[in-house]
Every structure is written in structure tokens, then in C-alpha cells.
Length: 303
Image: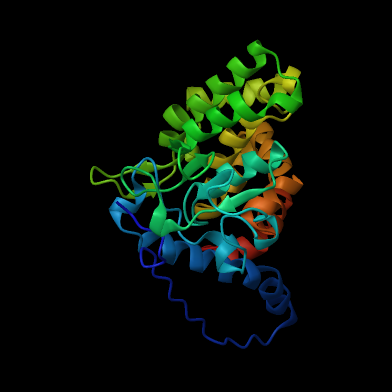
């Protein structure tokens, strides 16, 4: 099992100083160097991650842009307002799916959540995220990110006036995200290493149907419920792809514009910034909003 101690990911980046002598090149560099730095870090991190780090319940998505650019751990210190074992506790790390759980908590107004001591992680396989609800003597333990989201919907969506039918729809979408969308977003070798994303495909029937639904349903998955935990689950995977395969974003905007806009709107939410970090939010919203620069692409094609 992977352990979130930072040793799974090796990120070594070195950038040479290049002097450009023309104003045209200077303008291109000014618009591209910021993203070049971030994306180089992401690619080195992704390629150096061990295969075991991509186990279904704890796929390590590297230290992502959020941690690479100084974001907080699973819960920001200001939000850890109670002691571990006295209420809700998340055992997690920003390099895994843990922030997805944090995002769901924030969307439900659950701000008083403790960041668990990973040496006491109750997950039976020592993986993360893991969620504990209740006192330390007899807590309810939930693991697997999808199962945690479903538990939150069933037990903590009481203030949202969701009907049983709406909850059933949300739970269905959470399950679909884990069982069907995840394998599309992250293509793996037989030994479990992520090598590409299936979102490059133009004839993927499931993604085409998702595009059509988002257009029909005003950009949410359960229209009668508004933005819900269903959207947290689905948007999280899509936004992970935007982090680690950024060149796919232009393809999404041209081929699946409703999905691209859905991703942008989801990343723009305050709760997303709380969970994943404001730097990552800024990066993704900018990436999903920008119009491709043809001149920059010609000179700096790798970016």
C-alpha cells in the first residue's frame, strides 16, 4: 500500500536561463513560462510515482499543482477546530483523493473536521482517504472515496432538503464516477501505471452522453438538487485530468465544450479552493478559460 509520507513522489526540476533578444519572443515567454514551470513539475511527479501508488482506493495524483505551489494539507489548520476522535476525522493527504472528501464536506457545510494522525489511520490496508465518524472508542469507519461521499450524502445532507429520489440519483452518480469515469480518465498499463487519459478519444460514448446531459441539464448532474455531491465526484476526476494532462484541455474545449465549462464552474467554487488550494483553483480556472495561443503553441509545442 502507498503511504502519504512524501516519499512516493520525487520531483526534481531544473530550468535553464534563456535570453531572448526579440520582443516577439519575449511576449511569448511571458505568457508561457508560468505554466511551463507548473506543468514540468506535474509531469516529473506523475512519471516518477510508483505503480502501487495508483491502487484504486489511493491513486496518488502526485503532489499536484496545489501542493507544488504551496497549498495546505487535507484540511487547512483553521478548519481543524476539534480534536481527532471527537467527531468527524479525515485521514488524508493532498496527493491522493482525500481533497475530494474535503470538498464534499465543505459543500455540505461541514467545516469542523479534524485532520487525522496518519500513524493511527484505521483503514484496514493503511490507505487513504479514510473517514471516521464518532468518538475514538466506537467510531464509524468508512474507506474508499466513493463510499465516503455516499456516507456523507446519507448522513449529512439533512440541511439541503434532498428528497430520497434526489439522494438516490446523487449516489448513482458517485458510483458511476468511481466505477466508470475513473477508468476513462486514467488509462493504466497491466501493472497499474497511468500512462494516458481516455478523454483524448473523440468517439467515447459515455463522455458524449455526459456532454449531452450537461447541455440539457444546465451544467449539473441532478438538476432538481443543484450543484451536489454528484458533481463533486464527477468534477473531481475531470479536474484531475486537467492537472496531469493539461494539453487535453484544449481538446475538451473544442470537442466537449459543455464538459469543459462544467469543469471550470466546478473549479471556481469557493469550496473547491478550500479543499484543493487557491493556487490550484487559479491555475485550473485560467487554463479552462484561456483561448489557445497559436503562436505560443508553435514555438513551445511541449507546453
